[in-house]
Image 1 (spheres, helix red, strand yellow):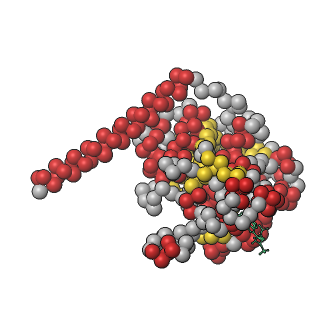
Image 2 (cartoon, protein in one colour):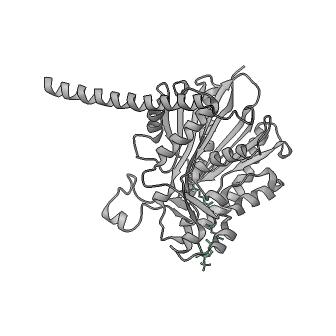
Image 3 (spheres, rainbow, N blue to C red):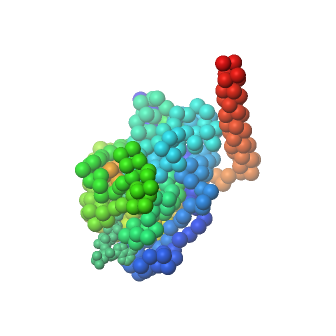
Length: 373
Ligand code: ACO
């Protein structure tokens, strides 16, 4: 029997700084009333200057490892789903791999907009079920505040920063990831886009002056796409797992807009208690939204062992993805002991020193080679 992919660890990190609707009303022509009624968002988190997608991803990953009781060297693969990587390359996943000291892990970034984390879950589950990997760390992390045009009221009220992580572990027990569906429609690419900064329009004085490095969005079209695709992806993933709507204990949808979440719930005939939402607190954190919401749903007691969950996302690309899973991890989790906290601290310090030594050795070797020539 092939192994099943089970969630054994989860963790989130959100920056400290809170930006409220009233704060935004001081920056652009908008109001708390408009933002709340059109989106359900009350506030969002904004990364500090010294934070980035990798630094938030690392913190979320550390929490997930601690919940899973896993040593970083036991991770086989790290996937970071993000539209706001620290660099074009190296991948953010490689930065995370180094900081964690996950010395046996392969690492890559996944670009599928807001669907990225759910895409990553499917990829990871497939590799686990194929027997290729045992422990995969999947992270959704974004610093959207750095690609947001803070003068554009149509977009700046929607987005926030943060990171969420999950560990999938393969074993023969029943449950875990039951099915997954992925989709894309590139004809809608221009609906959500960062026009410049890639190789098609490399950064130049002109692109910067024209604000082409900021996120642009055709909100109404994305809205129409979202309310159609969320229910259909949910139905498809249930059908693949031989389940019905009645079997769902909780849906954790992409947190873009409360109206999209409510409309999807209505068309699936789901009562609001079976649809998790925290969009009011964080806004749309793109690939980070589903894992942050999952962590909060677990922490707030909405998830129980044996529950059937559907995670569903949509986003830039256009893309969409849904995963059905049966929650197998015991809840609540043991509170982290002091010894365990100290142990992880030592591991991460060691990872930092190890990384520093390896880079120093590389530099010395380069100098030595130059000297011999
Ligand atoms: N404050 C006040 N007024 C505003 C604001 C604002 N912040 N933003 C827009 N308006 C105005 C518009 O100018 C417009 O005025 P007009 O009628 O005089 O032209 C009016 O409000 C209505 O604008 P709409 O865009 O039609 O408003 P809508 O009800 O569609 O809501 C929204 C806009 C919230 C963006 C909605 O369309 C939406 O949520 N779309 C989906 C967004 C989404 O899910 N994005 C996912 C991103 S996924 C990823 O991969 C990053």
